[in-house]
Image 1 (cartoon, rainbow, N blue to C red):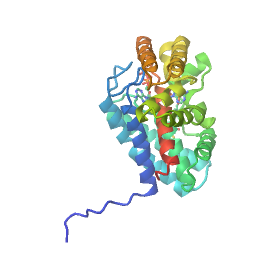
Image 2 (cartoon, protein in one colour):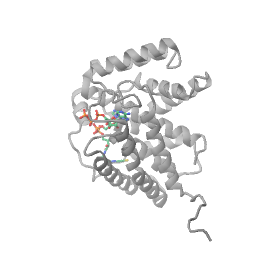
Image 3 (cartoon, rainbow, N blue to C red):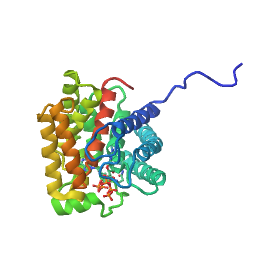
Amino acid sequence: MHAFNLQPKTLSLAERLADLAVDALIGEADLSPKPALVDRRGNGAHTDLHLGLMHASALSLWPAFKEMAQAAIESGEVGVPLREAVGRIGREGEQAMLATTAGVNTHRGAIWALGLLVTACALEPESSAAGPIALRAARLALIDDRYAPRPLSHGAQVAQRYGARGAREEAQLGFPSVLQRALPQLKRSRALGHGEQNARLDALLAIMTNLADTCVLYRAGEHGLQTMQLGAQAVLDAGGSASLAGRRRLHELDEQLIALNASPGGAADLLAACLFIDRIESGAF
Ligand SMILES: CC(C)(COP(=O)(O)OP(=O)(O)OC[C@H]1O[C@@H](n2cnc3c(N)ncnc32)[C@H](O)[C@@H]1O)[C@@H](O)C(=O)NCCC(=O)NCCS
Ligand SMILES: Nc1ncnc2c1ncn2[C@@H]1O[C@H](COP(=O)(O)OP(=O)(O)OP(=O)(O)O)[C@@H](O)[C@H]1O
């Protein structure tokens, strides 16, 4: 008899969903060259983040994603009890993240977006279509969580100043940036044979063309947001990340956004959401 069981352990549904969520975060972090974001090249516009921290943070969230999926399986329906359970687990995940990063916000928006999507998937594991998953996530996001603290977050300050409702609204509308922009662009660029990394960069740019990213608004105001949106569109118009002209535009956009300290963190979170849904749609679980 062997001392070790060498058989691969069969993962539960909740564990597989947590794996996919963490994979999506690592895929987003590693993707390079992303404008002004942490990637394999460097720290973009961030002084307090680096790639190792993004990886460690992503891994620290695995238990929270698993617990959210388990809560969905046990509850079986969208409703106040599940919303409040997921809110509590999300806040615990945030504490695990902050303990790992010594207090730096690496993945706040991603816990929210991916947490809702993991929960939505676990509610109906037989259905892998993006539309119904996003709709279930939106229904959850629309439910009020009475225990959620209401801090004067960067997002809340930007909402007061510019009227942008950020991460919450994106989820409540069923992730339009992911379903209507990122996923179609990812598929278009893949179909053109642009290569997976370029297709992912194009998907990120497609999100950036239209998003009211509260990270950018907080750090660089409306001018920063406009620079991000127009610059991302210019890259896509020039032929996307796979073309020489598009790459030149992408490099310019990176420099412009770094000069403005305008890191599109919300767009990055939504790219992770896009990569997650793409894996679900392709039958990964
Ligand atoms: C809704 C959240 C994101 C708070 O949003 P708020 O705008 O107040 O906060 P904050 O300034 O910290 O921004 C959160 C993050 O969202 C991302 N983001 C920014 N803009 C956007 C956008 N337009 N769309 C999507 N994500 C965005 C950014 O990465 C940013 O870091 C969430 O953290 C929350 O409500 N937490 C409470 C605990 C809870 O219920 N958790 C549930 C986990 S499923
Ligand atoms: N690759 C990435 N690089 C940088 N940020 C990312 C990346 N992926 C996701 N993000 C998101 O961007 C956010 C970081 O933005 P930001 O630094 O503005 O946050 P903050 O701590 O709220 O603000 P500040 O650093 O201005 O005090 C994180 O919440 C995270 O969700």
